[in-house]
Length: 311
Image 1 (tube, rainbow, N blue to C red):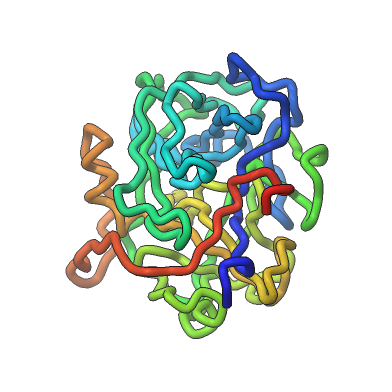
Image 2 (cartoon, rainbow, N blue to C red):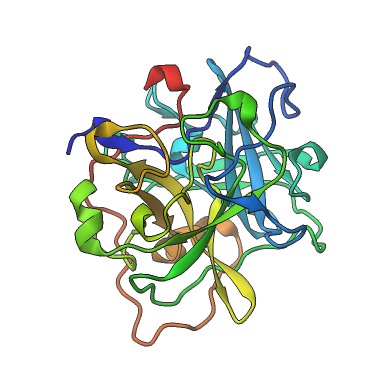
C-alpha cells in the first residue's frame, strides 16, 4: 500500500488568513472525533488544545499535559512539511483549563523538541515535547499518568479531541467542546494489511481497528490529542493521535475497513523524561520486564497536518 492510502488522523491546519498574533482565533474553534459525545467536565483534565501559526494559516491540534509545564503531542503538528523544519515555538500556543475551547486559557510555548528520529515521510516516531510556563492544578487542569500496562488485542480505549465529527465534513462544523469516543485495539495481522511495518500494540505504535467499533474514529483536527484507558475508574493516557489508513487511499474517517495509529507514549518514556524536567512515570501494570525502547523502525506514513487542499 502506498503513502497516498495513509490518512493522518489529526490534520491540524485550518485555512485562515495568517494571524500576526494568535492565540485566540476568530475561526471555528475546536475539533471532534467521529461517533463521539461531549466529554463530561473535568473528565480529561490533561487534554489541551494546540494552535500553531504557519505561513498557510493556523493549525489546530491537541496534546496531553504530563506535568505542570510539559505537553506531549504529535511531531507532525509542529513540523513544516514545505521546508522540512520544525515550526518555531514562538508560533505556538497551548489552551488548557476547560473542555470548551472558547473558555480555555492560552499560553505561549517556550520550547519544542521534535523526536530526533521523526520521519515526516514514513510517519514514525511521531512525537514532540512542548514546554510552557507552569500551570496551577485544579479539577480542570491535571497531568495524565502514562499507562505502563500491556495492551492486548481487543482492549477498549477512549479517544478524545476537538476534531471533525462527520466523515468528510468541513471545518465549519467543528464544535467547541471536547468529544470522546470508544475505539478498540486491532490485531497485528489486520493492522499490517494497511501498515505493513506495524509491530504490536506494545511497540512504538498502537493500532485501532474501525471494524471492531463501527462508526467511531479520530479524524482531522484530532492530531496530538490523547487516547486513554480506564483502570479502576482512573483514566491513564496510552498515546497521542498520529494518523489513519484506509484501502485505496480513501480520506474518509471511520470507514469500517480503516484503522487508526497512535504514538505509544510508554514506549517513548525515556525520551519524554529527558525533556520533561521531572520523571513522568506510569502505574506498575506490567507483568514482565520492560522492553528495550527503540525509537527507530521504517514505516510508510503520510501526515495530514496540512490544509485539505494540499492532500
